[in-house]
Image 1 (tube, rainbow, N blue to C red):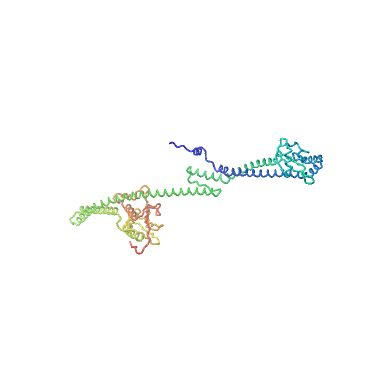
Image 2 (tube, rainbow, N blue to C red; image 1 turned 30 degrees about the vertical axis):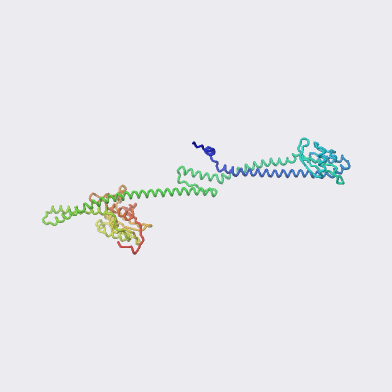
Length: 504
């Protein structure tokens, strides 16, 4: 069954949604104008009723003013006097006609532009009522208001009836004029209100919302560094501040995401390096184990043959060369064993300064042979960390020996300090430094810049493995204070505890 969209949905898609200006006009201005019109209508109706009542009262006052002389003249039969009174009343200009009827219901005098057509029986009924009454009727083709007042003689007996009329248009002429003025004033007021609302919307709301919209469009176009300037009423300024805060939060989230991605890449790189080192370490340990026994046999045979006094000098020289090369190979085998050996000793809390000084003492001979000056830069307080002292001391001695070989006759500095919740240990020299192309390969096994036969390329790989075993990290620091190479080890700090503390 095919889904048929609702008509309002279709219209909503075709027509744009009305803006705030339209809503203000529809929900503020239109109700306000409607209220003004209703108020004007009620006011005009009240004025109309009051004006009609006032004009009727004027007519009644005139009738009561001439009632006594008309009744007296009618009682004495002086019809001319009655006519004169009626003409004087008509000359006032506020009446349409004035008429006097005798007690038989016949008209005896009149003054006006037309005579009413009233039956005698109706006149007698009005006179017999003995009370004042008024009604609207048509006289001479015009709608008029007629007021009837019984006439009495000196004894109080009703002897006639007075009818005084006024055009109905007199009642509404002023009201119609008021209606015209009210319509003009209402339209003017509506135009002024619409203008004020539009001007107020533009000044107080529109331009500030437009500024926020422009900022949103700029950000949507890719300008993520743009920030809007909060201005205008409190609510719009709050929208601007919330918009800026949202952008700041997005930037902060992206920054954290990039940092997390960088850390993840670094961890992945370290994991691959660790896996590669572990694989090479297992291979190296196996090779070293297999070579250790035959090398020991060769070295022992060479030493026993050298004890034979009957050897010729050439044979003795060859045996000594065999012994030296065997010792060199044995040294390489020991390095392979150290590289392949996993951390098996438990860690304990020790002073980092004790381990550093022990490593410095172990390489004192190497430093003197290279003509280097080793300087220790300890902190003022004791720094405690958890490590395997012999294993970590081996890592420091490897760094110190590399520094002495890189800067013969120069200076080597060993320093350690605390930074936040981490301990830093740094070995630096004033040698030529490390070239940029090879920095990424420094910790790879068997990579070396030394001449063939002068190094195995396992020293920094062993250091990297030892530091990783202690949940630390090692990096090449740039630039170095001594202008050479600087390797920095970062370890987690531990709290000092006299019960668990041991000397290195």
